[in-house]
Structure formats: structure tokens, C-alpha cells
Length: 382
Image (cartoon, rainbow, N blue to C red; front, top):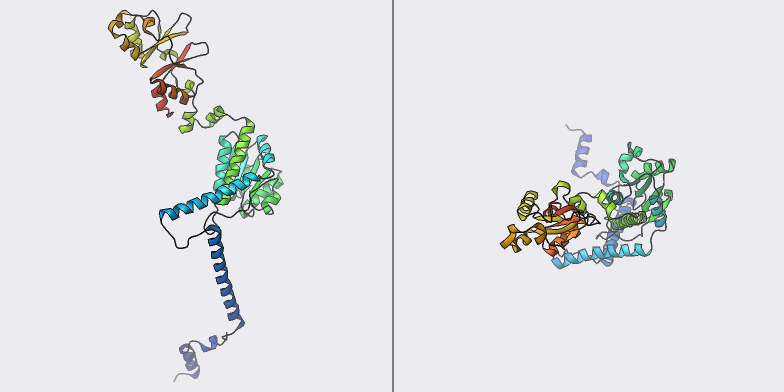
């Protein structure tokens, strides 16, 4: 026999748990509240859709044509360009003061941020360092685990947070306040924790992001990057940082090659193909061959350049070449450059005159070097 209680349990299971279903009647307050919430949610999504479509001209049909894709790109660039223009017309009030602070700095500029702000911060720090302002990027999370020791009282901190409420920056903010380290804040929220704590406020204009949903950091990061560039360039110009200073920090790559001087690439000393004006051409040919530059330079008794012999001069005088002397066939008006000329300018001169090498002379006209076009090409000047 099966007990009555067991029958009762089986019946409940077969009927889907009548007892549980009776706990929430059809028109219970909880069901009504859920219905209201769901309706509100649907209404909010609909409103957001309408707003985004009106604000950003979103085509929700997902047109994948090249024209539609190009239009999206144009829209993003226009939104961000307009944002930069607005900021340029209303610069942050502490911009000049922040630049002057960095200019007089004895230590380094410590830049910190999290997420996309962190990526932008790295670039700002790199730009400062490459234009004469010592700077390091500090990961805000790592700062809380020992890297705060990188920050000294001679430094300045630039902290970046679009909202101004990034929790990972909290320890850095407190550290700068505790040890009186100047703090520059970059944020679009002037009432935020970061900006309330900062000594110098670089407030970004509060403008819509350029993405379709208005949430991905696009406009805000572009504004931050542009503001960082403006700050770095302002300090750079106040410092009197010039192309020669720039070369010190960019010796490699294309930039270094473009800023190299003739003196950096020329051959000098015993490598110079120097001959006397009275030297027989048979000996001149030996000098030209052994030095390997394809030219020879004739000099006077006082050591000043008297002329240059090229392979073209040899061909023009081939009929009686071996009976002549160096001074008789040398070009008395050769193309020359000075050691301080940019290598790129020397290359342009070689190309313009269609020659492969030229002599380098000092201010008095004395030969101090020889430069071949191959030297420039190997250095990456072209």
C-alpha cells in the first residue's frame, strides 16, 4: 500500500506543483512590478535607439557597401575633428601653468592611466621624453604594489581618467597629496575625485563619443592625445628644443638619418684623396683607385682646395691624359659642402648635379672630408 502522503506528493508533481503556483496569483504585486520593469526597459532601449539614430545617423540596416563604410569613417573623423576644434577654441584654463610647471621641472613627468587612458598616457610620456622632457609611464595598478617608489618629490604626475573616478588611480592620488607632489589631472569631469584633488586642471570638453553606441572611448581619447601633444610641443618650444637636440634622442631609423649631418657620414683623415696640383696624372690615377671614391682633390701649398678631378674629367682629357698634370685637368670650381650641412641636403645636391661624390671643406676652404652618395644611401637618408 502506498501511503496517502506519498500519493499527495505524486499528485503535486503531476499537476506541476499547484501549491507553488498558488503562491503568486495572476495579478500579484511582484508580477505587476516585473511587467512594469520590462516595459520600462523596452521603452528605454527604444528611446536610446531613436537618439543614436538621430544623433549619429546610424544605418541599422548594416549596409556593407563601400560608400556606406566610407560614410561611417567620414562621420567619425568629422566628430573627432569638431571636438578638437572646440577644445582649441576653449583651452583648459590651467594649460599654460601646467606647461610652465613642466618646463621648470627638476625631476620627471610621471604619466599614469588605466585602459585606453593608459595607452594614451604611454604615448604622451613618449612624446615628452623624445622632445627634451624626461618622462616615464607608470601603470596605476602596479603603482599600488611597489611602483610608487618610482615617484619622487622632484617629479610631476599627470593622471588621466575621462570620468575622473578610476579607482586604480586612488593610491597615486593619495601619494601625491601626502608628499606634496604636483598633480595635473586630465578628465572631462571637473567635479570628479581626480579633478578635485589635482593642482592643475586640464579639463576636456564633454562631447559624445564617435562610436555608434556612444560608449567606446574614441572622441575622449583623441582629445586627450591631442591635448598631450599640445602640452609637449608647448614645453618643447619654450625650452628652445631644436633639430639638433631632436637628433640626440633619435639617432636610429629614418628620423635619425634625415637629421644626420655631413660630418656624421663623411670620410676624413688618411681616407681623403688629396693630390698636389703638379702631380703627374699617372700618380693621380693610382690615388683615385686606391682611395676608391672616384675623385681626387688638388690642393695648394697652403692646404686649401684648388680643384677636383672626377672620372668625367678623365674621359674629357683621355687623348693626352698621361702627359698632363693634376692641376691642368682639375675643375677649379667644384661642388663642395660644409660638415654641418644636413645629410639630406647633401643628397639633394648630389642628385641635382648628377655626381656621385663631393668634397667637404671647412670655413677657410680646406678639405676635411669626402662624401659619396653610397654613404648616404647606406645610412637611409634617401
